[in-house]
Amino acid sequence: MGRMMVIAGIVLIAVGLLVILGERLPMKLGRLPGDLVYRGKNTTVYFPIVTSILVSVVLSLVLWILGRR
Image 1: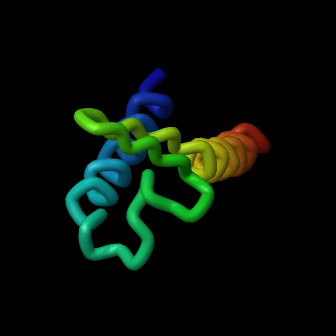
Image 2: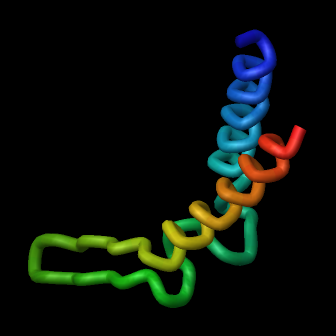
């Protein structure tokens, strides 16, 4: 239980750093090529398809590496 809490804390720190430094990254998370944007008269809706796939692949790799132990 303690190990999982430490890992969750490290993941939260990493996500927090990505949010803080996100403006300085060359590619904005959520604005990757392939993400769909619908702009209406009074609304803007984002469909982050490629971002979702990228996050899924990264999380799958991390959990696979941690699960091998």
